[in-house]
Image (cartoon, rainbow, N blue to C red; front, top):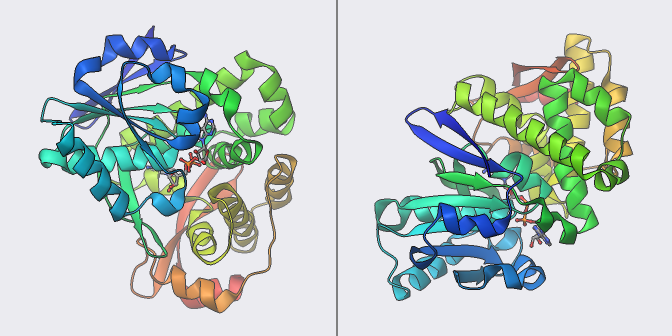
Length: 336
Ligand SMILES: NC(=O)c1ccc[n+]([C@@H]2O[C@H](COP(=O)([O-])OP(=O)(O)OC[C@H]3O[C@@H](n4cnc5c(N)ncnc54)[C@H](O)[C@@H]3O)[C@@H](O)[C@H]2O)c1
């Protein structure tokens, strides 16, 4: 087992990269742990869960809500879970968010760990300790920042990941490259989803590199006072679009990154907006789109990151260097 320990403020998180799921028994006590997963993952990997206490949730963002939290809590009470129980979220970002949120509030907080099974959860959602749920159209409106005890990567789960979920994951990987890692941006340009799927070594390296990019950013700024805000590249507009249109998270932030790059071109003389949209396109993601500006602006004005009349927007100075710029809503409306 490859184990690395990362500190986030007072908390430390053990990362087990490239580790078989069977090793989970050595990390958590099978008798005193409860796995939370969703029906897709359970159906494809049922054998792996043998012997574990499991709560299987319906799959999908629409279930990342308080009603699901209530039902999990009721099941935990029924299972007589107590302060010594560890919750383990085995799934995509919806499952890791719900698990972290429930664990942070059940009996005022119990231990939890993650086995991310989607590309997006491997490189992004499982890292950094943000755990939240949606309220109506507002994504992640309620939540907490609390670190898991461990994260275990078993890439065998990816064998059953549907094609559109690969694209969602690559949207976050391209985001990391755009804001932090020009060399990785070049590497992505000369590869494709297919080439990464073909070479497990290359994929494994890419996933770890991305997990470490996010880890480093969060370690330096756990409570989003500075650099962590960069991780919102493409997300401000992306979240607003996601609530208004039938778009996946990856598609929405891809459009968000395209517009943020074009705003960067107008405000910062960023030269490579077409490279960003070209790369997104190469990974099967949408770029420019038609949307109802007024509706989307109304949602943006409710964004958690907004100030009174303005919003902090993540822009690119160059590939690999994201910066934060305050833009008034009026200016943003004109730029869009
Ligand atoms: N906490 C954070 O810091 C953070 C960061 C980014 C995203 N998120 C959240 O993550 C969520 C998106 O994550 P996601 O895309 O992983 O969503 P998800 O959990 O809904 O997973 C996407 C779909 O893939 C399926 N799936 C996942 N792994 C599978 C596998 N191995 N085999 C077969 N099917 C599999 C799921 O059942 C689901 O249908 C959003 O709710 C977003 O807000 C959180």
